[in-house]
Length: 320
Image (cartoon, rainbow, N blue to C red; front, side, top):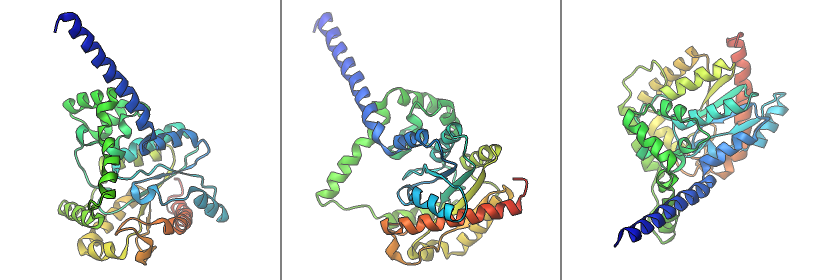
């Protein structure tokens, strides 16, 4: 191949690469994390921010929540930023974006389960796939993302490369349709109950008896919210009987929950224990995820509990 042909071939390859990156950026605008960023920009009247993962993502009806709060003489207009398969850093980034754009936010409701509030895990850029890709969007300040993930200098360079090249950053999303095809052809589905029990074991192994603080993203979220005079309320999410028996009935968990509750009180945060709101397994898809049947009752229960906890917090800490 002569020099002219080589340069022509190189030019075609570069054009294809640029086109592929552009197409990937357009396609990924439809993924859950980007939809949540769009929702934040559209929710100009919201005053109650809901934060969390899959336990809240598809199970909160914002209109039912608002109507229930109004019937209790409370003006709570919710915005649900929860995204499936995410953790504290992603929750903080969405919270921070909402706090910047929505001056009316006065309440932040954070759903969690198990050891999520204290788990400290070093995240690598190469692990940030699927719904954890919020940080790759240009609307998220790059320095905020680098700070909340506490990237090393090498990871910062890789992160900036991924941000510039959507084809690389969003490569994991290609596996969503592949996985659906595999299951439709008779392939086995993953057992969420088994995964959850393994995660619980991993989290329990890292707990040594005393909780002195929450993990860095959650701690930062509380500080930023309270600097804006927001009430912060944590909700220990409903669990199916199986999870309550296998995990939460253990003395280790009961001790851990007491420690976390104490730390939240010291931080002047509200706390709602919703673990037993749905005692029947008929409301669950697995040991932790509520099904469609639970959407309306959860929205009603959560709205009433938040209204009550907001009032209780004003009594406990009048200057808040």
